[in-house]
Length: 427
Image 1 (cartoon, helix red, strand yellow):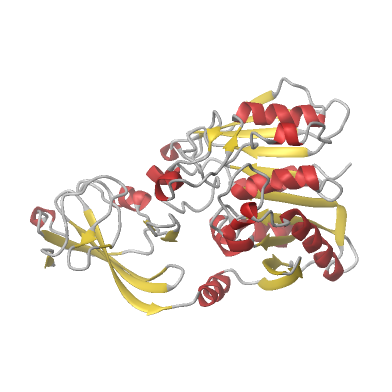
Image 2 (cartoon, rainbow, N blue to C red):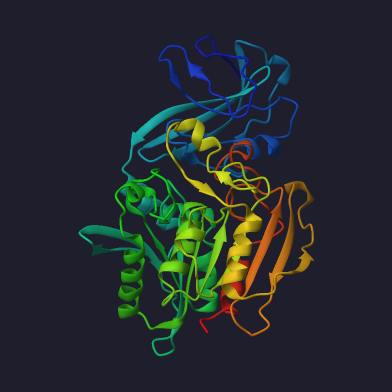
């Protein structure tokens, strides 16, 4: 099936790229791939996202695309396009789309046709239907309605205290995004291992994580997110029997920095933390000169294009979309480890192991560093994702690889996080 494409610009081959509709002069989006590359390669790079915010519309797998069986690549040339396939009911925050994919001479063109306006709440309900057992709730704290999603295992004991895991979303995200990012894996583990998991929402999608930055409303207005998490723990403890020695926090990016802040400002409640795709803010050593021991798991990617392995200003793709915003700076991954190792009183020389290369095609390897504590106290572990990006290992590739880097398939962050927490209750 051939389609005239005279009203679409052509010849754009960079990834990701913008295809403009000449009639409306609007970015209709997105990515390109050479015609002789495989379908898997195309899907690997496929990303539909809002150009203003940098947030994804959706992600896809080969199961989502209905591929035409009679593609004639010889007909691919500028001004002409061959129908490759269609996605149905793609959703962003407010709109539902059909997405038609065409191969052109040197690009794949993605044309979105708006179906209907949908509210963010309707989208949330739709997503929760795909992950049954999760419940939406809210509390009022410091005059603000604070929302969260909670998963209580069906098999949860009413008499035996259960661990509580707090999972903190990245900047621009929310609890729903985190459930999708982890493919619901932490909630699946919660059912199996009998712990409670909660996915809180920051005010306007950004945590007051303590950086010297103005990126989010919470940072600009100094919103008390530490107090909110403390109040949330107390609220959950009123409705479920929670073990006070097994309360844990994990997070990615902005949520990972927030988890580190909780380990420093809420030490009386937090037993251990897990930090994904981020490092320690550069202002924390002066702000917390004498941190108390806490067990910490860090999972940085050496090729993270947003929070750099060697530290410095946070930026990458998001700086390009929002120039002038101060996102603050972080220490290098090595210096971040040194901060936590010193706080915990661990050995400074780690025990190093290498994980099997389960998926050679993912372009990553995993190196683990264990910093033991000879006194039996807090421990620090760093899982280095060689070649990894600003991603959740084993999770959902929420943007194209050339925007956020690679997602490792050699390790399942959900399982690694829970195994670490299981072995590190509060002393």
